Length: 160
Length: 283
Image (cartoon, rainbow over all chains, first blue to last red; front, top):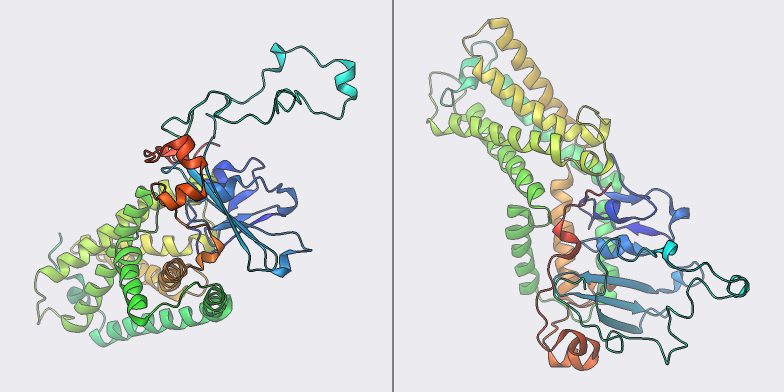
């Protein structure tokens, strides 16, 4: 469900406008606060929610459980290098917290170089698996790979 | 240039009582506009409902002393130093505009009510403050108008595009300051030019103070309330459902979230500015 903005928290800095991949976060010309101009086109990527320095953006829950008091909120702290989630269950009481290191890659480094890989075979085309699955998930290679199993380490500066 | 009192010179054409009633009328317009704006937007109702909602999920009740301390912090931070702005440019521009307007209004009121005629000369600092206030207001206002306005920065709107209600406040501010300075500095020049600038100054300030209901003038009243509310929900633990601010060096946090010490060490370094290292202008 689409994002919306708490007007009293927003200061109109434009971070959400900058990051929205669908270009649907805009600045209202009268109030100078951000708003989602086309909620139907929002695919809840949470980019703007995470980018907002004031935590002024939230996602509306699905209609079947939103009225019951659920909440999924996130705070991305660049300098600490972590992302924290707080999930409130639909009974409105049970809280669930998550905290993990940010593992964002530098801009443009995750674009698949399709010209450099062989075209999928007919068997792959007929398969239910997506491009490069299961190779990229590596489920065929033991288990889901972690930073540790891949021999990677978090480096200063968030990106690595 | 800065030390003469233009209001005293004006008393030759306009009686001081008329000037004083004009200032009172502007104050009434601001109060009325703010009340109507609050009633129309239901902002007070929103705050009270939001506070009630937050109280339900509060982990503890704030004492009167804590609330007073948060109110003082809000005044010292958000109100006096515009600390809410993450962008330093916006913050500096806002401070110039805000303090310029306050100094300009106070100096105008003092000159109009206490020293309206040349018979009673004002101490030099009041006209100096009047001019410096208008200059600071103009500086902050023009900087905002040409470079910082979010429509300009984020929406590609050109500086010469006027957008009615959204711009009425800032245009009112910069035109008031500009015409006030030009009016003052043309004293002794051609009489018609001097008077034309004076009437443009009066028209601008009437638009500024009379358009509170339609403009965003009233933000100076509800923004501090919003900042105070934000501090309260953080202090009482309800946090508007946001995650806690974890201390990554805290052993309890590390035990609860073992990924943190495993990948970041037990004393994680500052990881840099991330997306904040560049201004949001990637269009």
